[in-house]
Image 1: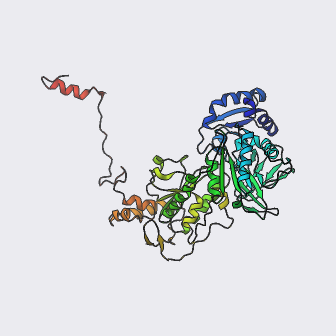
Image 2: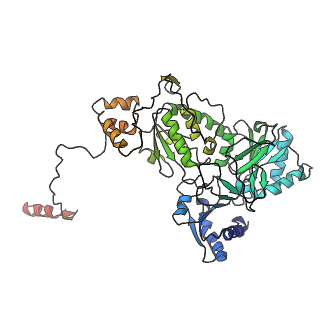
Length: 515
């Protein structure tokens, strides 16, 4: 495929000129970084020296998200994002997405859709990776022709999802559902409905929003609607694309649906996704394990997705209401070495976009769960119905997290095999965020050293990081000494390591010694 057509050079130039942007950040994933010089050169030849271009790589978090932090370091006015994207709303900068144009055999894909339609009595819903959106109109035409139907009346048996848009403009208030996602021609597609006005706001993020004409869904940059008398479980989901994070998001979110994946590279259908569905069993185990945690670490996995500060605050209130202690940690992409520096945390809550929310925590010392799983674990009396939510925007509520009742009834722990009583939050102001709160808490916890400190470690009853630190056998190099007066300075050695000056002098004074 032509290089400029694949990277949509002309469309990018039109967008940058229309917005009068003079400082533009070009964000590439690792697999496309080799093409960044050619893309920058093609854009610079048309835009001239008035527009400065900055190539960004190795983003601090997932490459599917717009790296607003990296763009702010060069004072960029907008970001052009290339490659796979999760389409998470941005906080401060407008962004344009170039999904690429992956190759696909339209005829073969249409034939397989027709084969699935003839072998099932369910309506088919076609979902796809955004890199295949360029072939959607052609696919609709070929499927309609193969079924003997007109393009305008292809029947209710085959439904297609649409791309929400290719340009995102940040909202002025990122804590509310006012994020605007614009398409190229200035109109906006909101769950299948297109408006030609200058502005229209997308409703609250979430799946399964009830509308007058049916139920609307949004997932991974795609949007579709189904009639009000149908359910999503009654459809056969036909996914076009590789087995990546976007597909895993579909499998987990619609785990009650029958799903078929078309591999465009190998041109074949795959129906066995037991591996993805086994992830749900693993996640349920982590939820049960998180219920027994006393200290929770909140991992910030994004600094650009709109609303991330609000969901972090919501998690803090939820954890505090459950009688547990929380710490907020910002460390870029988490790995086992980084998290090993926080052994006091019994579980971590990872706040990130939907397509990077799942981390395989087998190699970590403590489990890592999503905000949805945290709501199940720390919300007393909540039961898992099988529904699974990866997008933290779906968890946002205007009235704050669900209140936890102050009952002291014991709960049964499936991990420890017995009844446990959760630690209730103290009312003495210990957890107030003030300048001396940490110092006072640490001083109080250090006094526990003489009170069987190993019992805290053995029973896992540490209520804060300072109590955990007081119970450790090794507490660093800053020990308290009896004599606090500074020692006199000492002159060190001089010379080379092969023979210091004092060693040579000793050798000369010693008869028969070799120098």
